[in-house]
Length: 124
Image (cartoon, rainbow, N blue to C red; front, side):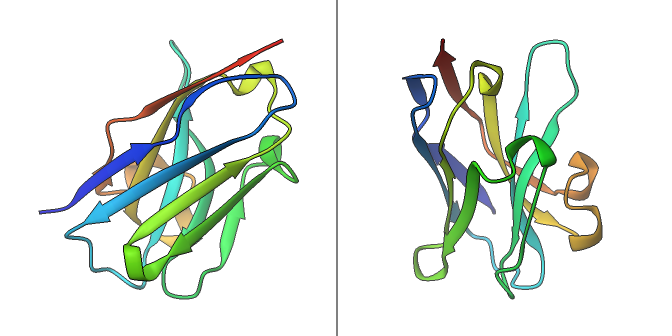
């Protein structure tokens, strides 16, 4: 059984940084993607950034280009999201997802497994 556990959320002022972590247990796919999504109340869940666990290639949304960086520690089965230059509009719940297909990395239906989410709040 796959479990994804996020951590690292919190409150920060605009321009600050946070690092999210997603620890996976029971996940053995090396040719699929893990990703970070975010979802504001009343809005669709948005793909933020992804990493292909086998090749370490990454993809990202234009809204976070140059500010967020995804990485992984295969030995610890953990994926990280380094968030720099945070903006108030980045405030929302962030979710870790696993099992996605590379061609549809930003589609929530592509993923089989989800974490419970971690809140990020950026004040102006």
